[in-house]
Amino acid sequence: MIGLNELAKSIDHTLLKPDSTIQQVKIICEEAISYNFASVCILPNFLIYAKDILCGTGVQLCTVIGFPLGANITPVKLLEMDEAIENGATEVDIVVNNTFMKSGEIERYT
Image (cartoon, rainbow, N blue to C red; front, side):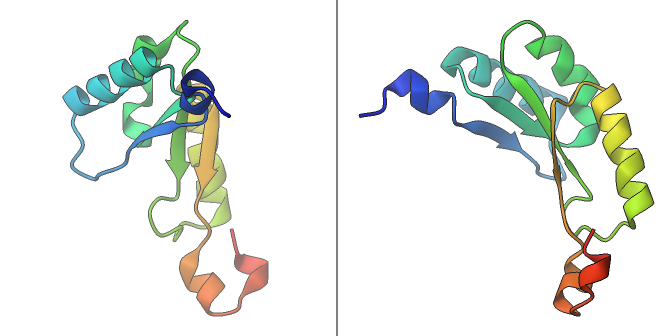
């Protein structure tokens, strides 16, 4: 049977609402620290702020690239990913281009 601490280390505490606030980011970071979650997943614009809160806690910092539709072209996603890592992200979730995927344009998936 899995223990609560082991279960907590598999949780990514996520806040990706377009109207998220710095106060909400602070709260989920504090909750993630308190419950020993694996990571906090937030919008890229909050990374620098959350990085300061999570520094040294063991909670990883995750963000999304091309969220929510993946409509950016690959070079834009790569630039966004590089910036996210520079701003403290230790994990990035990249959204595939939904319109290309639905159109069967497999070579344009990214």
